[in-house]
Amino acid sequence: MGGNAGGNAAAGASSLGACDPLAAITTSVQLDVSQVVAAGQASDGSLYVIYNRDQLFVGSDTDLVERVVLGSGESPSQTDLDYTDDDGTPVVVEVVHDDMGTRMAVAHGMQKSKGIDSGNGEPLTPVDAALVAKLSASTTQTFDVDFAASLADGRELVVIAPVRGSSYDEFRVFLGPVDAVAQQTVTNFQSSQSGQRFATVTIGGAPADLTYLAGGPSALNPAGGPSTLTIAGTAYALTEGPVSAGAGYLCLAN
Image: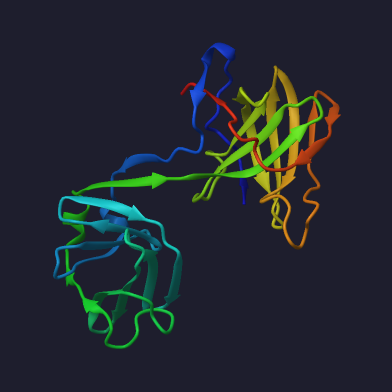
């Protein structure tokens, strides 16, 4: 996965403000009728919408909320999407396309095999895609620390990444003292298949290159890395580790 990070624009210190980069962001979604794979309603009124192949919206006949799909299974005629309900119950939503048409079902509770166990699901009443597209819908993006390290001069380097996403537009790089870890301007973000990240950043007006291994140290790679930060041709040693407790962040203004 690779691409340009276009969400960060150049800005000076005056456009920085205190923020919580890990705070979830909820935005409205305008559903496209052509992307509604299937929609169905359960006996309790709950509405289930499979959208754009592997997205899932759940709600009522007035509001839909995108659910985080934890697992999926596909065949030429069947798609199963798994998510966890608000009370922690695992849920499977299934759609089947065959000679009989399109059928949907939902099952609550752990299944013995992938998909819905035979006879365990509730058939859903079909709902027209045009009606679904008119409903209010929203999605919530959550964020996590993709990488954290400290420099010899005491500054902290933190990369915040979206938990879900297929591009790097929402990746953010922060650098600064622990009480003012400031967002930097990112002009490019890429990754190799091995998980090595490559970022081009502007720090203090100077070009900088950052490389690191996504996720940091692991059981297979306890030392982490290799991770490097080079600013205007000068290399800075990075010591990988968790973000300091009580770290304060400054974000670029939109």
